[in-house]
Length: 396
Image 1 (cartoon, rainbow, N blue to C red):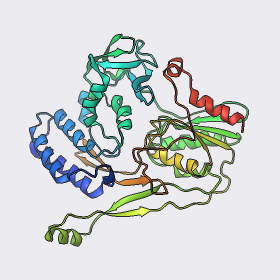
Image 2: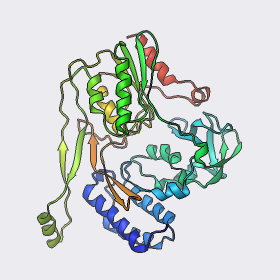
Image 3: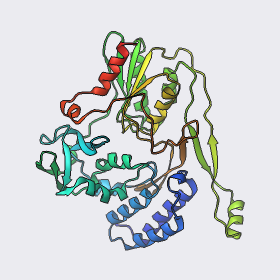
Image 4: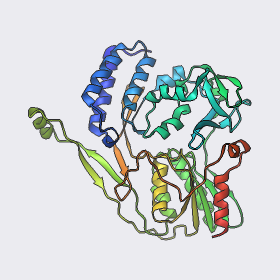
């Protein structure tokens, strides 16, 4: 179902209004002229011929703000142009290639490097598609390329590093996605392992808490947050594992001007100024009976948002050893608006910095010990990050 031109302009206006009132990440785009951008996209919106084209223009508009928590989502993209990819691939920071991590296609195994899409080099494809990707850094945009199936045709081909050409059909039946649940297991007599793939729901946090309680008697615990894209920061879970004073990030949010101030700015021909409330980072005492054993947390380039909120206190006060790959670098609450419960607009409304004021957004949390899987490790299914954690715990 297409959207009438007046509805399209209304959606663009809502997005513009939300950005002007709630967006907090202006330091990422000091060059942007918001009024000129709005005028440019009024014309683009009016020139669209279909709902799909309109959605892509709006995604391009929201991506201009270079923030992962600032986005546009139209459910019709999924309903009409959906169909999952049969593989999941991320960008390898050192090899500078996109490598498959998991797949339901027998021809595309983990460790496969994707060189081309429909004969076009993947780097060139990425540069064309990047304009639609809301991301706080180029690194995040690269890792998100294959997260959005609608960026690709329903049917296309990939060329692999060994020059095989493989035909792909997007279909939910062949999706690489699987149900993401907590996994808890015993590693040795004194080491336990808990994987937490998400904090996106109360049940996800509840399951994680249950798993950790189950292994509280173990002297050493590994918490795996690789692939955890966040949700709601599990404050109680942090407290249950924290046995020393700790602090969190600093948080900044926009304070809206009152009506009189806005009116006076308009009368005087001045732009409305943004005022900010900064919540400084303060130390908190641990609760009684929190877990007192040795703790290691595993992270990677897809650990983000609330998962980074979880990791930081343990990194900051050295309560845990952080092992793996530098995290994504995007955090903060999202103000969400909608149109007819079909179109959703998200605006990054809370900014995060490290306690010393240094920038976090787009940079992430550096692990205490970096372990980066090689292409060979991925091919062989060798989990070198987990192996490093177990090795470390055996000697402490």
